[in-house]
Length: 268
Image 1 (cartoon, rainbow, N blue to C red):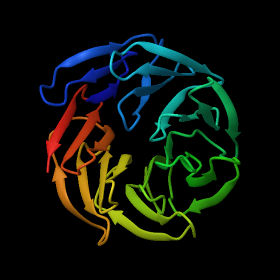
Image 2 (cartoon, one colour):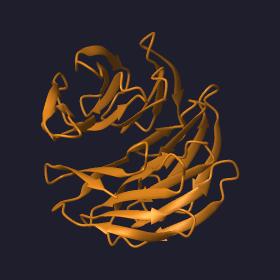
Image 3 (spheres, rainbow, N blue to C red):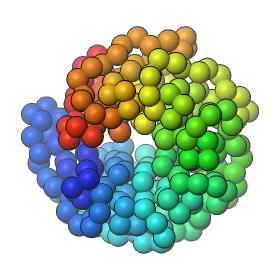
Image 4 (spheres, helix red, strand yellow):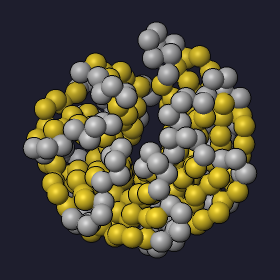
């Protein structure tokens, strides 16, 4: 299954094999700018400019819960592998950590000085990563809410973040046209991936951490070798900014979403 969000205020669930839309997620009253799905496909989270996060049944598309608390536009959402923890970032400069079982927000992560358009959570739910228009990436302890690292190096807004399955490597994409790879423990920048000619608006990492995928305002999707920091594929086809990318569990398929109103599925 592929899940997309759109400026038409809806989310959509697509059959990955046929490309057909099987369910529409209707309820948000403004743009849907973030989508995430649990590892078992049972829960979908959407974040919207209507200031809410909504949880949906990943099989039927039925609305389960509405999470309220942000005071401005919600941009990104992330969900832990077990579906128990939801993370959202907002124009209100905060990151919220939600308990999907109780509908409550036990922690609000404060520290960014500008909009938070990017969040990620490690598969075990122990680490949260956020990227902000304040040009920084922050690494948080999900249990305590303490910021353990502030990663500095980007020279413009951070638009996207991802974390490896082992929680040791972070990828960030920025309006400075680069992708940076960071050591999550030490905060050291390990590599700078250069090739995009405009803002990098989406990043994803393969489960084994060997492959990085990025989307950008230059309308392309790039596939990178994480070890060398060099790009190995440039995928052309979108006619507008690419705002979302994802990699299948086996690393053989990439999905990208664009302002050109399409989602594309690429086989590597």
